[in-house]
Image (cartoon, rainbow, N blue to C red; front, top):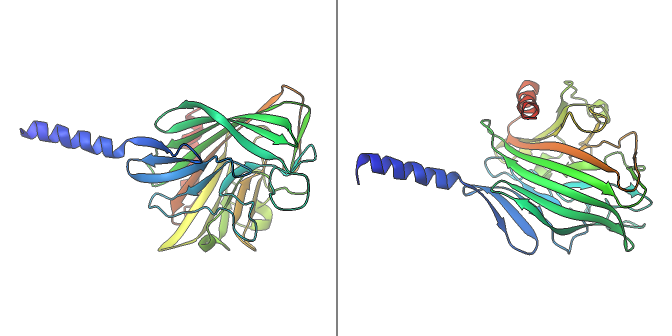
Length: 289
């Protein structure tokens, strides 16, 4: 083999090693990979009352999410849910009350790095919402794993999308146990949990301990989201939790056939990133359109 051929073969091998791919077990989980590196998994099995992402990993493989802990079994990694939709709870699972389920119906378009799914939000035999969801793994020149979450909800009947007494509803993540009792920073520079929780922001990030140092996770609000910039919920007094919480203060009423769309980007990294570093990620995203 000539030197030129060897270089071409090596380059092709390196590209193949970096190739993005999805691995679907055909039953309950689609894993997103970048080459041999596992980024996150989307769990859609019928045995769970909601669909969600877990594990979500930092670039070195550190898991930053937690699924179904004993203290709050309904905390399912990175999840989208609400507690009060027409009297039904799509957030809780074992608590008393009338519950709904977020059910995977089937797949839409699929690529090497992105996956579309169709879901229905149903309760007691009635469908309240239908959802078109797109998840994508996004490459970045920065040492970070990025996940795009795009959900469009369409009302099958008159619906009040509400958190009720639970302002943390929306797209939220329960962090890995080692990251409990961590720190917060948002786009306004707020580092006090009491102020950051409920404060409208472009993004909010949480840092905590992980094996070998610190790890962080951030959620970014897209400028096209309803009532942008919308609030976040964040806490660390019992455990670490972060959510983009668009119904923190106000509900969204939807008439039959009306739709509402939310776009978020989620990042996971190692170390305690500065406000400037995280804001750079946000600006890169919003320049994409």
